[in-house]
Image (tube, rainbow, N blue to C red; front, side, top):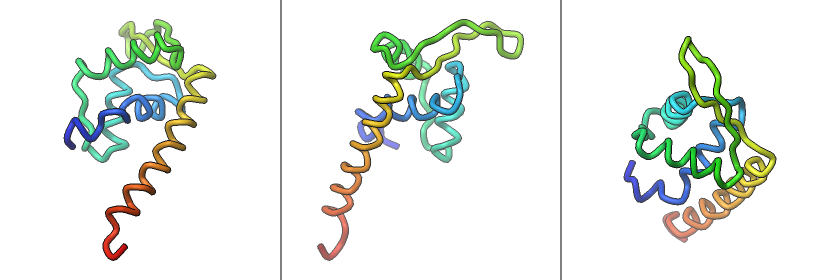
Length: 107
């Protein structure tokens, strides 16, 4: 998938995979890869700055934990993050409907 297609949607996708349970960065990458059917293979240089930015914005909180014998920073959604994710989903549905309406043949 082209990187420019993802621009503007990455934050919502990250929040969505963390919504179900707290995850450390590598688990976020794995969840994005799995949920996208292998299409979304983010480099760490993209994911970790995004996680830090989302935390600074108040959408995520984090704490250190030990996972598989390794210390990792684990992220969870805040109340503000849950509201932001709901807004992202709503905006996505509206955008997808708009694009579908324009691209659908015979309209």
